[in-house]
Amino acid sequence: MLEMLLTLFLVSSIILISVPHIPEYRHSSTEDELKNLSYLYQGAQMNALAKNQSFTVFMNYDKQTVEVRNRERHLVSHYSLTACRLEDYGLKQFTYRNNGDTSAFGTVYLSCDKDSVKFIFQILKGRFRIES
Image (cartoon, rainbow, N blue to C red; front, side, top):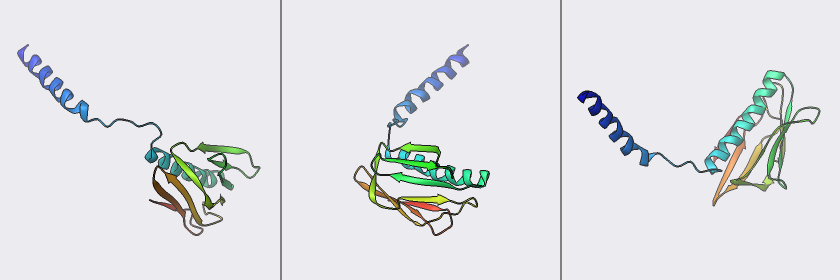
């Protein structure tokens, strides 16, 4: 009985010490937004490879959305930006071909809080990197 109380005391103490240090989740944070955009681009590329058809990614600067459409121009997926803002210059659209390559290369510019973030797409490789 004493051992059980001692164990309960230790576990309670550890929980009380660690709970204040758990980071607070911030809804619509810049980091989450960049991850979501990254997943959207990767998802479009994986769809192109899996379905063996091309998918076009559009950056809509007026609505602040990124849209993925298939060959028939039907909307496959889209993401509305909340924490960041698409800048009017840079890459406006590109296509993931059925082999996963991109039809264009360039940069998608975002302004997140006071930072400038760039999604840089490599020539024909279908790969991108994020710079801030």
